[in-house]
Length: 120
Image 1 (cartoon, rainbow, N blue to C red):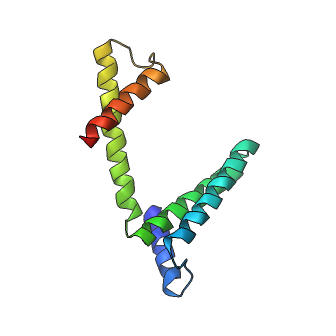
Image 2: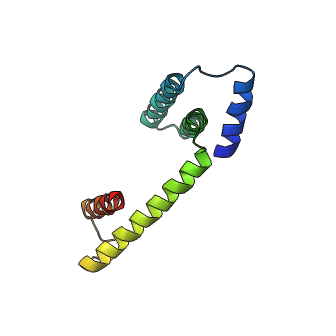
């Protein structure tokens, strides 16, 4: 889906239907996120799906505009998540905390440690 969105925005861009710079894409993304928040506040599932799709589409367009393929960025984010989540699991095991019984605070602390370790 992200790759298709990127291609659609490329096609539109070729005929001039595009923002002149990244700022316009970011503003559109901000608009879509605001609409997503409104749908969330209304607890409207159909609107949530609609606005989530629009936000994802805008993110794909931003990736295109930045020259960063959104599929590649998503794959890298998935790898980071997997690595960090495994670190959380290992950390809980080392602390003797059974899976499903850890607090969010415990898991967040382990997540932050894993993220910091990646930066080193």
